[in-house]
Image (cartoon, rainbow, N blue to C red):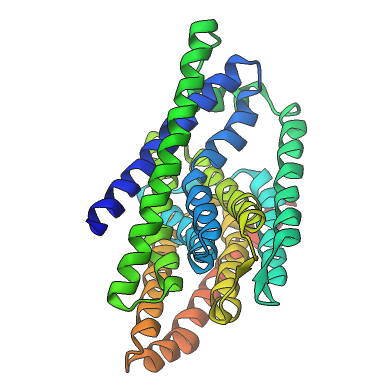
Length: 360
């Protein structure tokens, strides 16, 4: 029955996020809110609704490891798995704004969350500071949207697919939002309960469950949105959705979870020493990848996918205390990582040289 509730909870989370995004998107556009703002906030934040539901539910229920692990695991999954898979399907265009503004903001938010967690707890005031950040970002996005071109706004309008409608339409949209929220709340309850029960039954740590099973499960809306956007040719939306979701996870989801945790969220030492740095490294790695030609090439997508497999393998080997863990760590540290950095460095150097010649 635990497995059944876990699967049903996961399905309800994905369905609830989809219904919520559709209802909120249509209602916002119908109320005269810029389609670009809807795309940057409702779509990106809406696909993070499962992370919010799960993390808040876990924090309120005393399962802090799942709450924090879900956010860290989802952010790593979003970049390495989702962006990697999307780029492997088709090279992804990276908007200049993502390089200059949004990606640096994700890096800054990653550092802030890590610093706040260094004392081993994310408390009420930590959560309030993080949540205030997402409010400031949303206001910033609204102000910035006024400067965007009509072509950009039309692109987000096509993604939302909405037109203004009457009172009946407003009622239907409101119903969609209520149904979506209901599915998210109940689905998150069953998913967290099922994941916790399975972890205890198999003797697996809650941290591992949060970083892997729950993180991938709650990232399914981002996966569906970005992969479909890549297939349809809306490749900048595929990237923007991931970056926007990561920012919302760090500030909105982790912040709200901290506000709802009765005695704060305990942060495992392994997360502070390993998982937070990896999440930050993944965010920093986006800058040179995004900068090289404003494009995520297919080979870079496969590199991302390879690193996600390596990260998951590391988690499993660590949890099971497997004998090959030391060999695996040595191979990653002394061969794979330096080779990747060298390749990215050469690619970045060539890009800078080409731009220098073009400027002349």
